[in-house]
Image (cartoon, rainbow, N blue to C red; front, side, top):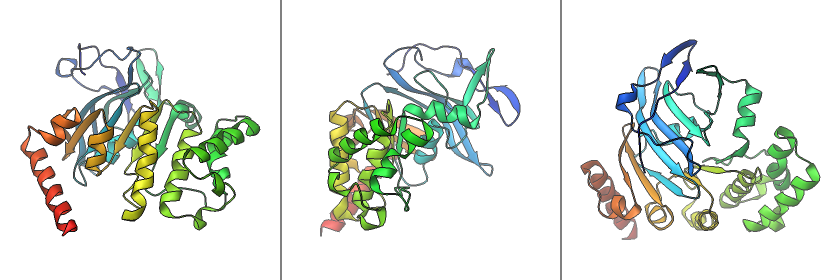
Length: 294
């Protein structure tokens, strides 16, 4: 999935311009390739001086599903949030269809974009969070319509029709007039998925979409995501659902301690892992699964 080396842009970091990486140390594909949706190069991030991401490199192709696995605290969610600039990188580069979200190019450098420009850049990126993040004072339909109408200024009549179709798609056509508090956790998460789809995204980001759900509610949410994968959406899914990742993902990334330990096809990573860190993680998962079954 990686190809020829190419020059690395400069990024704006806390008021000073700097070269983000030594180009000789980076292997990355041509970002102009139409099949490359997400291209991450040497992404680094720290919180209070503690490194959380230590040089992440990843490439996601159009229409593919990438699952990111790893123990808690490995940096998975932080990396996902860096893609759409919900977290700012300390250094490195992430482009979505050739655009680094949260930055604009001026001459040969990148500088921080305005809030309005960043919102415009995020126009085709849908994100589903762990905690649903629905507005409690809005109906299900209003929640789904909110971003296209209020942020992207689309025609409410057109958006309403699209939103109703999406609610039907996720099995909630009869809940359009309900408020979030009257829905189960699984139903609320499916509303969140419909909301993400309502902006007609080129990329969908899922941050542990089932982690806040009771076990009996997980299946419906995973089935909805599976349908999206079958529909050809480009998706990055941070998850602990290993069987789901094996069945649905085209590419699996295993992270630990802020680095990509290994990545490859699902059978290579989940059935025949090469790195001891991955092997130990999968052994613990199997042991815990067996203990729950007893």
